[in-house]
Image (cartoon, rainbow, N blue to C red):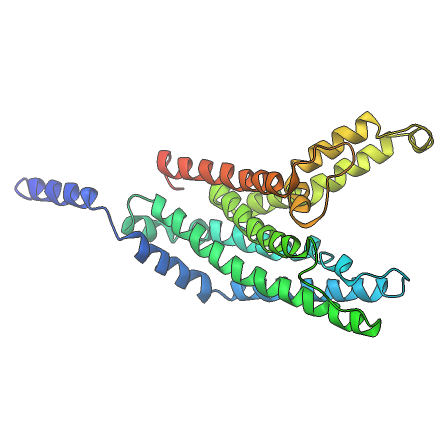
Length: 289
């Protein structure tokens, strides 16, 4: 028994010194996991369907207006179309811990961080493909209303290419935000709760709180934006919803700093990078439980 101890120690030391599989192999493994889940394809299908359906309904409702512009309805489906990628990201981020597969995964990849990096790359790729299809579906959904009014849909008009790219980036960012929160919290319920609160509930709550606290008569009689409204609009700008709006709309909200599309993209990137970095630190510094 004592003779086997040095051999066992050498085996353990050699295993600990082994770097594990390459990042390319880990990415391939994570891609297989992602694409083999039905939930991934359901999320993609829902994203495309919601984007197309809401854009179509909005364009149909607006087509009766004398000054109807089909491109004005292009982003109508984004509010709900961003939810499936967000949920998908959470499921990817929490999947290893929910099923207990992390034991096998981190035994095969002792350094751990390549797993998170591979999940980030595969989620980005899958979300990018889904986002392109969703934006394309939204564009196609404008055609019936535009043709009924004899209006051509010009995708090369001023600002339209930026809006199209912004829509794609927003959907990809929502998936990565969900992944970052899922990897940080490691449990679906708290991760989904925080994600929904930050992306959907908090912006609406801030607007409602300001409306209830303000005096509509005083606001209409005074020039400019009331300080409370300006503060709320500024806070909204630095939330994912507000930053995403800067990517897909022209100009900032009244009373809020005009960060522009680049500024909105940086704010959105920060919302992804910060929890993702915290998840990487937790993965490296703490036991996986």
